[in-house]
Image (cartoon, rainbow, N blue to C red):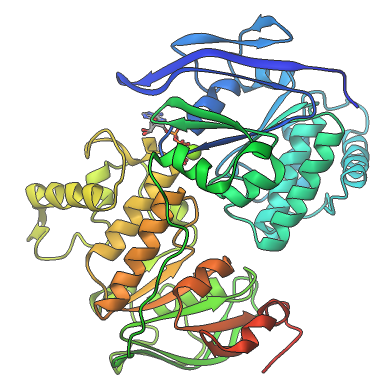
Length: 504
Ligand SMILES: Nc1ncnc2c1ncn2[C@@H]1O[C@H](COP(=O)(O)OP(=O)(O)OP(=O)(O)O)[C@@H](O)[C@H]1O
Ligand SMILES: [Mg+2]
């Protein structure tokens, strides 16, 4: 057990261009505690933690460790004070190995035999926390969960006794989430402090001792998880009742929109990622693909939207063959795409919000005349998306990179959905969204279904899949294990099918 430590943030305020992101926030945390940080998209969680990690300076307020005021001017000083952070979007160098990544950021890499020593340390930590990580592997070979473990080891090897995790579970598979939770609980018993940001209330209730709720930059409430429940936390966060159940009405399916036949696609590593897959999706239907990530979901979404070459088989939209045609052509056939890694591929971070609101649509008549964009129209459209999808941003003239993580997600979703596609290909449409926005987005997908769109939905969240889908395909190792109607009692075995142990 580590010796007792207490860290306190006191009266912290921070504004960007005169607009407050944090207002007079105070809280403390002690050894062996896990503190949950909750709040809607844009509430100021990442900003507050970036201040603690030395990435931003507060306008006012102070940080105290064991009653002594400390100044944290940058991450190096924060590490020296025993603070580590795993960011909302990972910051590892893809072409380097685990060992190299850790050595690069290590605060006292030994002069003699550095590789050997650091490898020994990685192995020692892996053992004591039950991590399973190969130091020689390159980062790009690792799953999101493994990359995250590298970030955690990096922080621990630097002596962090406070670990900040900013939405650590939104990119993980259910199995990886379980493993992460075990690791965090173990860290707690060893006396570490953890600040855990998540939009998933089940996780917060499971692992946190206390919760701090932010709303519009201010503290909206505090609670002990032992004395509260999910409903009250959601109410504290959103300021109204959030319905956790969504009712899907029965609908007859309409015409066939998407038809995929004998599709085979090669993945990045040179092996077939999809093997002879066939299915159709109809009007008024949400077709879900459930599975552990990495089993061909991404390749399927990419093949249908034209960004990955099809090896054999065919894809038809409204009975027109679109196999291996351009993404633009496919988009013009009424196919929209919410990609998996949307922060990387869904936006142009340096551009303004209004430019990002029409990415891929700039060629449409309503937005351009010959070579010129009709900025009036573009801005009007951007304003409408902000309004309809509750994107909280200072103005449409902001740079998109300055929006909070969840608000970037909302903008991309709004852009792709607002054109009312015939087919929407949506990968994990609610990750990173707060509870209110999740509820809103799920209802929106049902609205698309009702008004005649077809939706191809990829999600690892079984609750989401069950709530929304008319039919569910279970994918494993590039093949469908089964295609089931909602209500089919074989759905009880979906876990086994996702693990590849049962094909029906
Ligand atoms: N560098 C910046 N420049 C300008 N505004 C910023 C900057 N960083 C954050 N903001 C603004 O501060 C507010 C709080 O953002 P923050 O990222 O802290 O929210 P969050 O609670 O982490 O939300 P999410 O759940 O969506 O990740 C937002 O309005 C955001 O636009
Ligand atoms: Mg954030």
